[in-house]
Length: 459
Image (cartoon, rainbow, N blue to C red; front, top):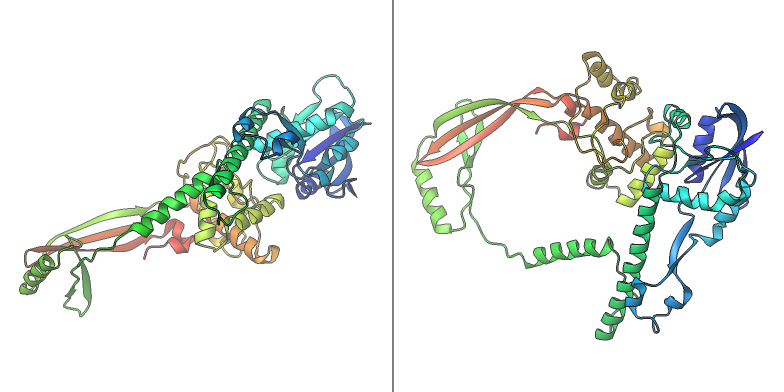
């Protein structure tokens, strides 16, 4: 019987994948490195019965670094680091990952790679290939396969298994280039500015002043914003608030056409003019129907923004929760720049899974009955579909923060296929003592998506 070695990006993902593909009919054992498990089961592959071994890595297998002699700061000019030779080395020597992979791959006939479907995952694919290809059996035809998936659901995983492709060497090479640039630029500038500033400021409270292609520009944005805030000089200004009493006893607060003035004497002059007017004359009344548009499909940036501002969850904590929800099959892959659903995305099927939910099941059922609304067209970055719920969950299924994030992701998805919020807007224009004012009010026609996202309802 032939052997198929399958490798995922993390142990929890390997377990979830093996459980789905084996229909829970598998045996599990601890790997020789103590960090990864191996899940064994029998199944069909390329038309024959085979022995499957599903295991994982723990992120990158290899990293890059300079040769030892270039680590001496006193003897090596930072400029030399731009041309110095670099070597691949184990990313985490304590895990003994290459040795573990070679042991499990010995005499295997096929390799199926289940790494995350992004450029980093593609790069790890080739790290795994480099570790195991020398100990695998030689078989005719294609021997190495790549699974493409965006969610840990039975439908997605079975589809990926039935539609295996080849790993993308060019995407992997782009990560190699990025790693080399990060190493050369980061190390060279870190050494240079550390030595420069420590020599210039003797009391500098830092042994290392690091530079990074991402962290340094980000720090620059923060400093620029801080400087703007620090240098801001507030100026006094004056506004005129007017309230009009209606015959029924109610009052209206009017907005001044001039908004504000920075000259107190001029503002006082207008105030005297207004006080001289005994009545407010209605000049014009305009009514028009307005819409509050539903949100675009959810991408990572928007998820992190809302989690931080709305849920009080730090970005790193949010991504840890999202990764966990993903590996447990509750949401799709949480790292994506795309906020537009692909044409073949099963919106109705995804929505149907929420039709019995105790919190939003009634709304979803009505939506399915009346027909889904076409989502807004966003940006397709060509990576992964937007973040969506993949199966129904309640508070009892998840911990507190996981439920809060899942609740938001699900409500956001439902909102994207819901009607816009519609209202009737009335604006009345007044004149008081030659000064112009206005008052605007809105009357709700249809709450639309704000029913499922009540924090966005009309004020």
